[in-house]
Length: 414
Ligand SMILES: CC(C)=CCC/C(C)=C(\C)COP(=O)(O)OP(=O)(O)O
Ligand SMILES: [Mg+2]
Image 1 (tube, protein in one colour):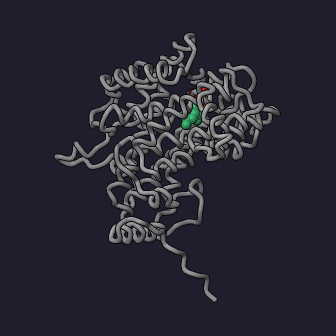
Image 2 (cartoon, helix red, strand yellow):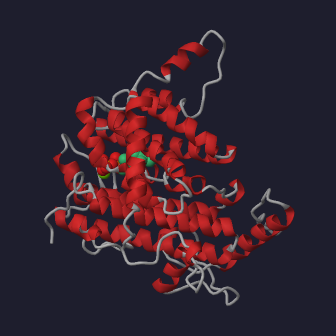
Image 3 (tube, helix red, strand yellow):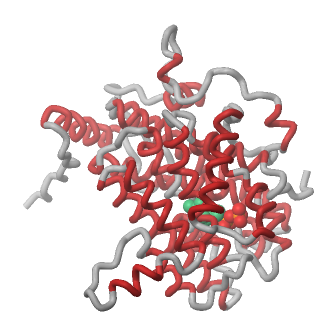
């Protein structure tokens, strides 16, 4: 008997759009180009039916949106070259493939910075007084304004900004250098996760759980940030976020398990852990922050999942490169890609760092190739906008790392 035909992706969109989305994506899966081993799966056969962009100029055009007369309002980012201030603040890692992003709107940055500080101090009591300088140095206002250039209002940017502060508070206080430890991390993470994914229990035990949501700064921050997020998102967007946070927490646990035994994983194992201990929950809320929705069935498509994973991996290896010297100075051994490559492949620190740049660049090129193929194959406006939103997040994330010289500095390898 012949094997059954693969089922095309299903959609619950209105019928016409559903047929269109499912068919386009099924066709795209059949004809997408062979883009190399990094994206997994068997080689694919190019089709003359759809022109998949093949030059970096074409890819950039697709990811950045339309460029003709009268289309300025359709782009996520202004067309001007980045302001020179960006390069005065920090320099990019030499050889790193990236796109300079425009400087974030200073008026928006000032307002987001004011509001996030008030939230941190007055609503969730996020940090003791002596952490204020580090809070300010994190510059979350310019980070989130830069990563979400299509947010319609400051309220929308705030949705992402609160979550970003909450995610970092938990990472610092549970896992890293503000009281964190691998010991007992599993139970702390699970209990904190119930701020996002509530416990349903009996009348007797419910009050103890409800009280626990305010027991420490990470839980207060997660609970409050999630409450704001849920007010702005659809049920499926909120569920997407919970799933991405469960992935993040699983990544923290693997990192902690290795750290307890000072174990250095193989490079591929490290990369697998870092696909979970990853920025992914940040770009995947780009539609909520943009005030629209990528429907769940389009978000779940394997090609969309691949694009999201590659974007998350590229952004997270950017962190490994920019935070390399900070993590070398931290107590104990802090794993990042250069450290793991140096140890496992017996390379000098410099060779390992330069190899990590190459790993990043391959991931970044794969992200752009896959995103462009999906954008070409699926011309639904919310898919196009979501892909552009993820690309804007990737660029904004790089820009923030490059320019956050309070937090990061480059090694002396060049
Ligand atoms: C989703 C999110 C913002 C998670 C927090 C985890 C996190 C800060 C990263 C994925 C970045 O990695 P790292 O913990 O190494 O951050 P720093 O190098 O300390 O800035
Ligand atoms: Mg780091």
